[in-house]
Image (cartoon, rainbow, N blue to C red; front, top):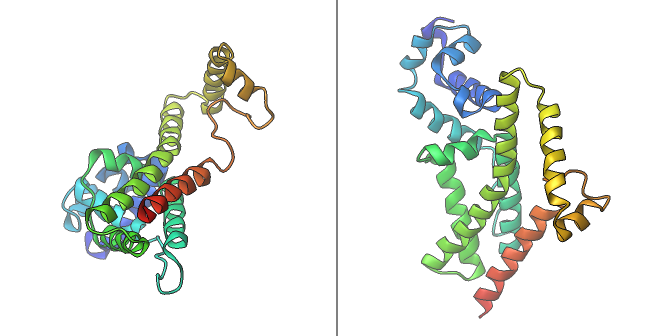
Length: 224
């Protein structure tokens, strides 16, 4: 594709697809050009460099988030909806979790989300720095929970590139992990329940349980 027929929107959308498939480590102008059937050098007519492209891709996926209307729903309903939506976005695009460790992320989409998040906790009764702390606590909780999915996606890509069957490797690792866990009474009891299909799996509704516990704590703090 000649450079004059490319658009920045095409490049960013394709970069998101590449990031979803290959992760942050798989993003480069050569691979992107191949997907667009264009020379790698043509990318630089529309984006400055890889860091700039990551920022643009981040802003693209941040735009997927729906922001609740505080004139329609209460703060806690809004906080829950935003946290769940954010978690689902991170699990759809696990490279974004990686990006937080390697880039300073900003953009219109993220700013729009962060501004509404502060509004939610101000509606709860937090003021000044407290609203920022409450929003940050929930964001960090969501990001931490999504890190597991991001790590699994990254490991699967690595094993696949190494011509190793990812499922076989996981099964071998889980077998060894279970052998160690069985030497500890509480882990052994958990592994002997039908719900514990794999050692590393979180219990059902673990994310929702932790989120509501965190919001309970914030609500009690406001009340106090």
